[in-house]
Structures are given as C-alpha cells and as structure tokens.
Length: 275
Image (cartoon, rainbow, N blue to C red):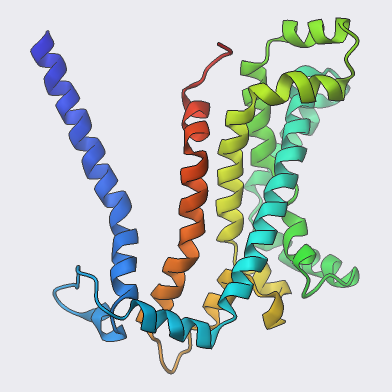
C-alpha cells in the first residue's frame, strides 16, 4: 500500500512539474526575446538564452510610447474597477444569498444571462452613451462599463451561500444589527478569500482589456498600457525585441499582484466552510 502511494505521489509531482514548466516557459521566452534583437524572433533553432539588449530594447519602448504614464493610468483604472466590482458584487451576492424578495431568482438569472452576450455587441451603444456624457478620452469613460460584473456577483453569491450560515445572520439580526452592519462585521471577514480570488480575476482582466480602451482613448496622455503597446506595432517595421520588452515589463505588475494575494486565492479554493 505504501509503495502504491509513493508511486502515485511521484506521478502527481511529475505532472505538476511538467505543468509548471509549460506555464512558466512562455513568460521566460518573452523575457529572452526582450533581451534580443528583432532578428532572433525568427531564428532556427529558437533562441532560448537571454541576450544583452534588455536595456536597449526598453529604451526604444520609452522613445515610442508614454510607457510609465500608461502604466500609471492602467493602475488607476484597474484599482478603481477592482474595488468597485468587489463592493457591488459582494453586496449583490449577499442580497441574493441571504435575503428573500420578489423576483429574486428572475433577477439573478437575468444577470447570469448577460454573460452569454458578446461584449462586441454592446460596443456601439456604450460608445454612444459615453460620448453623450462627454467621457471620451477620460479614464472614467474607460472604466465605467466594467463596474457591473455578472461573474463576480455569481461567485460571491455562491461563496456566501456556502460559507455564511443562515443562523449566523439571524443571530446578528437578533442582536439588533442592520443589514449593512451584518455585511461589514459578519460576512466581510468570512469572504476575504473570495475577495482575493475575484480581485485577481478582475484586476487581470482589466489590465489586459484592449478593445474598449482603444475605442474611447485617443489622447496619448490618457493611454492605458495595452493601447500604448499597440501603438508600437507598425506595418512597415515590426521590432519584436522592442514590442516584447514592453509586454514583459507590462506583465510584471500582474505577477506581483498574484504573489501578494496567492495565499488568499488558494484558501478560497480549498475552503468549503467556516472553521
């Protein structure tokens, strides 16, 4: 029995090592290309060792784009969108999970159905509304359509339903707590792991958003990082070393955010109930 257990554990670790390698390799290859001249992109066999042009390629990025300004704009957009989504989703999830009101199931299903609608279908009416309110070329216009997140509401509703007992909520009501006090003092401390998970998902998705921001942002001073990076790609001359250098440095904040909150992210996956 012990031998079988050791063999099965060996294959599990082997699988994790292989999966980890394939997960990390694209990031490593991007770093390698960021340190090489553009010609190395098409070299056969592929170049797998770092070069000496990391600083030179990044200097080209700074010459072509307002890189740090775009990073700052993107950080503002991502932080605001993430905080607003966490607030709205947690409050809505709490209401759907613990309250009874007319049409609750219809409202919840209607929110879920919006997830199957391709975002491109709403591009024109959303652009019209943002232009009508004078929000073009503003960071608020670039972030406002992402404040309501159906996936976030669904995740919070499911997590609160499973992790917050009805008895705990009823006990808080008997103690005279208002609904918002119950949310702040009872529910919020329990759902912190779900906050981390949803926060990482929303932050990453917003950081990588391109289509809407490219549509509403035309002023270079308002560029987010994805729009700024797209401006480096020209049909006449594509410098892959420069482009991948910009992409590499633009990816670093995502890695930092995940490393900061990975413990809460993992606990949200493994937790099934209140300890």
